[in-house]
Image (tube, rainbow, N blue to C red; front, side, top):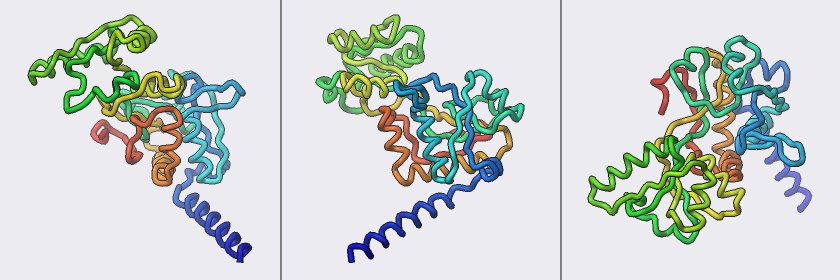
Length: 279
């Protein structure tokens, strides 16, 4: 009986795996080569980097590897500088630039995007202060640190005004020269929290062992995506289907959470070929 149950379970797993692979349509290139080839910098943690053992890791690399596995394909990473990627796609040197591109009118003249996460700003604080950020205006009455001249610096000014307009306690903005200065100020109780890029903040939470934790809420939200050559619908649909399969089976969340990027997750991958498609 145990043998029968084991055999049946194995058959179900194999069938599910095969079904998952069939759900992802292969582009002509993947179908002919058996490889999912992507361009990537391998230089920007937590998205892509070389670890201490010399392995290629990071959110982008691991998501790409998971999509390749669904199709029964081998992942091949072609390392190149970020500025060369969109020109390379336009010149047919490769099919996929798996990075975190923001959609702009200029870029969309040459490429299409498959959106798979979102950028934005978050506030992080020390664990002992986490529960003090409550309500619809959690930053009012707090001392919030930012790096001077960044998007956070300008956004906080708007939130300072919002607190005043709503009759809430003053949001006290503190400006610092570098990110490490903001973190040190938070750890030494000179500020209550810091506002910074969601990816940088989430990754610091993971790598610091939770010295600071990211609060719920994403400010100045915008989607980010993988670039493919303009009009390459086969490749775009393959990536969209593959990513949505990972979202459905929980693999996407596991990879994003591994690097502290839970706040950057989206519910569904989607293709963008014009600014009108940006959600």
